[in-house]
Every structure is written in C-alpha cells, then in structure tokens.
Image (cartoon, rainbow, N blue to C red; front, side, top):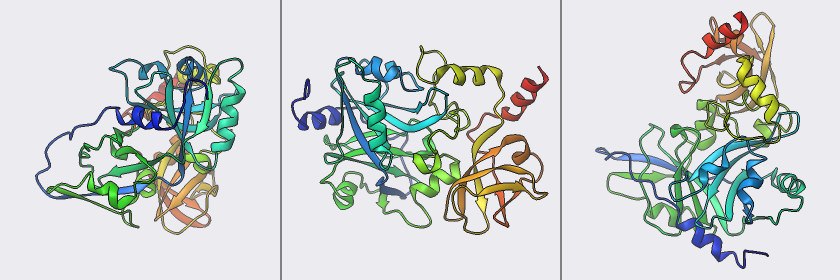
Length: 340
C-alpha cells in the first residue's frame, strides 16, 4: 500500500505516543477495572492528506492532533448531509503524521469504511482495518481514582477524550491478553480486576449517560448535540466546513436543543428503543441502551428533569438523572433561548 509498507510500522507509531502520568499518588490500595472493548474496532487512515480528509468529515477539529504538542486523541461524530449522526469515533494520532487510527463500532465498521472511501475522491488515502494487529481496552476506577501509568513501549495509553470518569483508553497488540496486559499496570498500591456485573464499562457509560456504538446511536436518528457531543468535547464550532456542519452550527447558535441523551435508573429489564413516557402518558423519548439496572435514553430535557423525574417505560417505572458533567445552567439556557 502506498506510503505504508507494513503493519509493524503501525506498532512503532502507536507505541511512541504519549504516556499519561499518574495524576496524584494513591495512598490506599485501589481496584481498577481492566476490560477489553470487544465491540470496538481500529481503522487505519493513511495518506499525506489524512488530516484535511478527516477534517472535512468529523465534527471535531482534527488539526488539534498535529504537532509534537498535539492532543493524543479526540472524540467526534461523522454525520450525514442532513446533520444527523452516522458513526461515533475516537481518533488517535501516531508518530507518523500521515497516519491516524480511528476507533469505531465493530458492527458498523464495514459501512463506516465504505463511508470514508466515498469521500476519498482523488485523495491518496488508504483506509484499512487493523483489527488483527491492535485491540482497544479500557482501564477505569469505579471510585473515580486517577489511572496509573504504564512503561510498556508496545502500549498506547491516553485518557478518554470525552470524560475523565470514563477512564483510560489502551491500544494493545492483539496477542496481549488480559493476564499479560494487567502486569503492566500492577503496583503495590493498586491492582486491576476483570469486569463484573457490579463494575464494567457498559454500566459505567450508562451511569454517566454516554451513548456509544450503532445500537445506542442509531444511524441517522439523532443530532450530534442531542448525543451531547458539545458537552463531551466532540464538536468544534470554530473549524471550517464538514459534512453536516451547517445544521449543527444552526442548532448550537439557536440554543434550542429539546432532547438529550441522559442516564436513567430502571426498576425492571427493558429492551432498546422502548418508548419512555411521563406517569400521565406523555411521550418523552426512548431507551437507547440498557443493562444492569441502568440505561441511557434520549429524552425531552424540560419534561424529564423538571419535577419528580419519575417516568414510565414498558409499564414499569424508571427515573431520569441529570449528569453531573452537564453545565449547571443547561435548563436556564433553554428558557433564555425560548424567551428570545
């Protein structure tokens, strides 16, 4: 492939990315959860025009990855021409300025790669899966403790670019299993444990109200600001044009966002896409993903968060929660926008 002779070059590029130091010393022994992200896949996008290519497609500013002091990763969404979400992604820089790695939903990977190739036109850009070379993992503390560092040169370790509470992303060679990987993070003051029903990545996301993947962010069904891209460091309002940018900017500047993804606490198991109503029967939104007594739902902000926050889904009660990472005046901004 042009400009990229062999997959080992990916390994050299990824392994030379930044390492994150421990944010502060841990005085008591802490358990961190280390979990393989089996529903995520890594795509290699390579070419001299890789940055301007992705810059015209992603909601975030890909230029921020450039240079020695550039960001290690960033979160963003790929939209259709109508400004609705197609794919969520985390983009990682490498030591090769012509190569970026894009983490996407595994089930949507074939369609996502076809989407990228559609916009390639005459640009010399290679787009390939490196699923046989690297896997994505997450390391997080259920108590929100800072994640320790690793000195293994084969690993790329960086904070999740969306929220500190979502822990740390790790890109590791596929031949490195949980047992080998955990040795790189074992210290006397902490230990890593496997995911469990009480502590796992899906439950962590649902508790925070963060949707991810093609099931929770269905293709063409929601706008990026409804998916909290603005609150999750996933959209730039200062970059140039990209596919879907016009409507995204218009919604942002109007200040009128009626629905957003938010966490819900369930009292009974429910399936995805179940309708959520008020106790009186008014339609408020739908469940986008659920498990472990928690879920993430796209709900009308005013009705879901004002008052008792007690709702109904499939004949059972559920409770909407306001994420603590939302701006304090999110409801106030809506009322001002309507008043204007």
